Image (cartoon, rainbow, N blue to C red; front, top):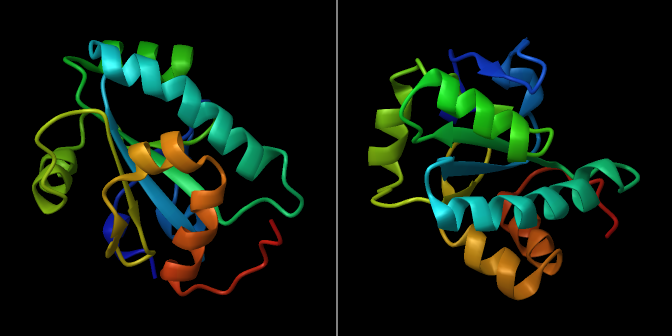
Amino acid sequence: MVEVFAGRTLLNKDGDFVDPEEALRNKVVGIYFSAGWCPPCRDFTPILCDFYTELVEESEPPAQFEIVFVSSDKSTDDMVEYYHDMHGDWLALPWTDDYKHELKQRYKITAVPKLVIVKENGDVITDKGRKQIRDRGLACFRSWLDAAEIFQNFKG
């Protein structure tokens, strides 16, 4: 049950609409609050790309992990440019979806970048995803997976 994005539509890098129920089922979800105008965001996004690529694209089977980008950009164009130029092959909440404001309140987002790691139902595993990735690299995923209480097929 992917309650956190239930009833919403997400986007992939190709601009296709994605059903969150399918895309996020049985996964640890990183909600990435970020913006192209923000230098610390532009600094961290490539690190997050490497983390995601190693976990999801280069692991066999792929790790049970997905990221959803929630933009704090000033326009759809700004968001799309930042998403396409710098982000990994993960999902995004459309810029026009006002749900981003609810998410920012729910997860007490006061500044970007912020990477909140959540269970399928939206419960927080950690709101310090960025710091943990910087400090521990791939090792932090194992602790997130254990905390997520999902069926595991991850061997790493």
